[in-house]
Length: 383
Image (cartoon, rainbow, N blue to C red; front, side):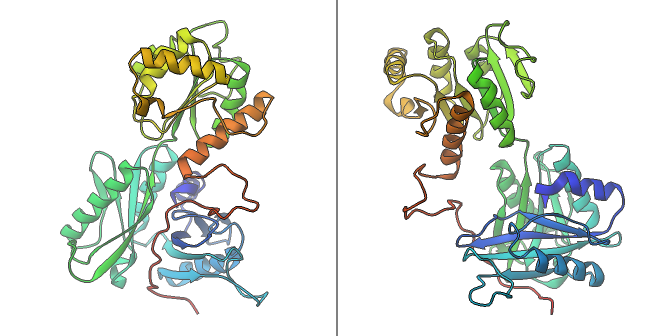
């Protein structure tokens, strides 16, 4: 749901009633993961997607039905085989989809509206909804913010609210969306509840060091992938907003000094394109000791060997050096700045998703490397 927050926020501001269908769990080769959503308003207008097209029509009907009767339902869509008119996934996977009405009189609306607004503003927030459990709980939601404040809840069940809030904060801290299993009263005992937690976090950072032609192409690809992109270079003649109009910010500063003072986290990617020892060595000495997702450095194999030797002299250990992706990028045979940017971006995606980088043709590796989330049982269905 939060993946379509900008469009949904406009609906909320316009006072529209709508129903939102959210992928709760996937199995096998499903096209989209937990959190993917499709919303339908009272006029039948749809935004978003839960399957890339396979079951959108059926989910659209479920949303219209939810708007009419006010009931939250969970529906499973599996593989459609020989029946060309069957509703299902052609990829062979399974998805569970939670459909929730969000109308003016529904108790879930204020909480959902706050969560959508926070996500649309780029603020960190997590919203939890009951997927499987007592029917009286399925129309409610709990919003949790990083500071621990929360909004909404599950009725007169304070212990359940506290437990769900703790689970939601843990997923929010990791920037993850998924389901958790807890007891009905908020403990690990008792009747089980399945809770969907959707996290919205600010875009991950990409910091590109070196204001060169390759950086310009990488900025465009980084923005396309959803990163907040910073370009940093010590040379003011090259590091200008005019040369990098699509960057979120352009910083004129020695790279290692900027990295010392800026905020990074476990999703941050660092791309060092300067291939100049006076910039690279102090920068990489710091970068390879930070808890970031990716550190890559441009240069030839000879440059890499020289750089690695200098970093060892500077005190880096072999485990620290092993984090460095150099020469940067995957072997695509790239030559132009745009092709090189694609090569770098491909390596970043492979690092994040656990991909091998090899051609899928003839390979026996999974297409999707996301950890599978256990599918949940239905809490209702629509005829």
